[in-house]
Image 1: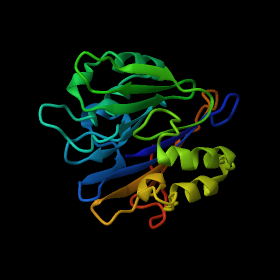
Image 2: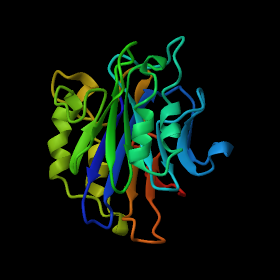
Image 3: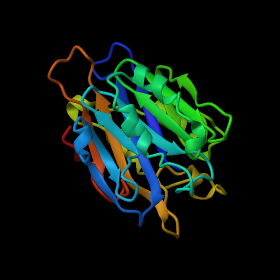
Image 4: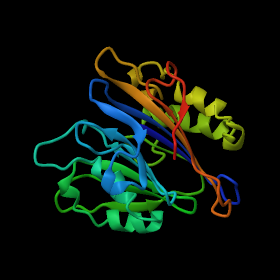
Length: 251
């Protein structure tokens, strides 16, 4: 289960702020965000070195896309395509609205179940697929304000992590990318504590006795479209965010 936090603000210099912890088998090889695909030179993304896909991508048009597994679907499945293809396909488009419409038309039976978030400075969408034959990919707009996605539905408090952390993020001071102040969000993303009896599921920063856990963390800010020359901000922690500092990604 990964976690994505999205803050959408109207009439802001930074209308989209995003934070994401990637939870995965820590032995699965990956590369830090970069321009890894010659046929997609306009895309910056972390690379899953095993399947050549990504969990989080940003293109030069300001479209960001993130993929999350739904419950009980960690890892590949014979006969299914890699879900890591989908953020790359989303960032083939110059607008989130166009990307969401295109990705909603895929055959959901080709992939294990997923949550896909596609956003830009103007719009944001949550795409949900159960992966069942005969089903359809559902597409929902994400409202302004702060939202969370895990392996459950958008803002679904059935998720221990959302139930524990949604109100904490809503109450926290918003990041200030201009001043490089992400302090409150960094603290929340690094928090290992969970509700008693919930195991690690309620923690933002997942630590287990096995190979699975939080392996990296990202903080992204998109500037308003009228701010010509101002580039998106991407800070990346190449490990658990309470152990490894965030470093800037060249976008």
